[in-house]
Image 1 (cartoon, rainbow, N blue to C red):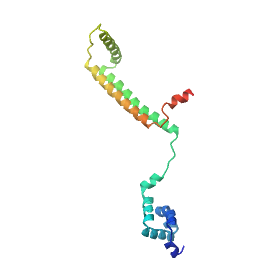
Image 2 (image 1 turned 90 degrees about the horizontal axis):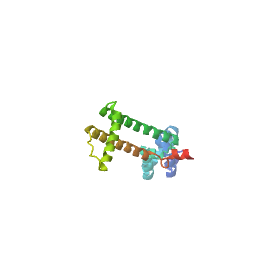
Image 3 (image 1 turned 90 degrees about the vertical axis):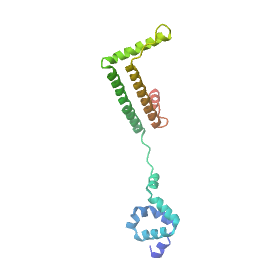
Image 4 (image 1 turned 45 degrees about the vertical axis):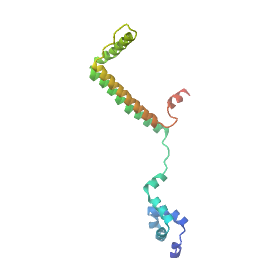
Length: 176
């Protein structure tokens, strides 16, 4: 390429050379074309704007495309997230029950719940008085309500993260 040809680069040719120019490849491979592009950019505002976009990292990242992840990856991540959210909550619920009532008291809590429900049923039918509720039961009830709300919130996050059309697909696949 002669010096006169380098000065007369058309915009279309410069735009083809912008990527190797921006990456530094053109400077290593063809110094005359590199200089011609540089000179053209000094005088052409349209090509200069194209060059600014070409060297912009956000612009380059938007231009990249990535393949969608395989369904098995998405399903595995969702399964892992569900277990990492729900197992600690179940452990926390068990700990709350143990802390408030002791190890042997866990069964007594269950029987106490049944007794309270029977007492409420008797009170609502008019055959008994309203049962008194121990303070520990109120605290336990509030803790379990909070834990249930947290679990519901976590499940709502998982549902929103699930790809469209994937909710309940395990049940559909099993029935087909």
